[in-house]
Length: 293
Image 1 (cartoon, one colour):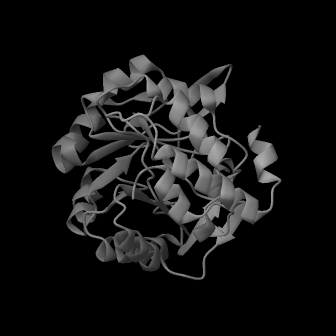
Image 2: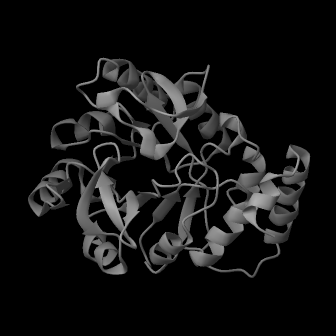
């Protein structure tokens, strides 16, 4: 059965599928590696939102919104803390030049205060501000644009971040888009292509300089229309380093596919399809499926 078929079911039917899978997963073969759920809090213009990833164009003031929350970021952080789910990420989607940046940052700081040590944070991270976020309660800082400069890896900038934040507190964001049949890391709110492909070789080369990887599949981010299976297979080849995939998950069939193709080594973030953000997939059932509870 295709993912699209499951999405056509009523919400009750979809949740039944989730319960069946999560019950079945309890009887899966025991193994050391299995997929975990990682929550998210995306903040844009001072509000928690779910957006279509490739639509974020700050200079044009355009963004396609799937969901705008009436709750602040602290609410979601508190919810994740009470659920005892760690390793989620907060993303500031406004650059510092935006008139909305301060409101977005204030929301991020509320979330960190609600869940010290439980959340990572990304968006405009550099050596000068990494310490501020870590002291505010972030477990890790997430970095893309500062490290990938002028289309390639800046080893000098990466070294500066390692020294300022500590390698053990550093997540490299390798969010990517497909071009000419290959996935390339993108920067500047996912609008600029670099010359660095997401390959097993790239992952191995960078793995000694960070604690984790985060990878948004930007072309399907926010669409809940299915995962980038080829990308997941690449990420699944990496052993011994946590990597979280985000993008396109819209059903429990997608979760099953992601766990299989990622060899149980790739964690997952569910955004627009999550019931907390107006989607059809129940939070509790995702936790059961991913063995978070």
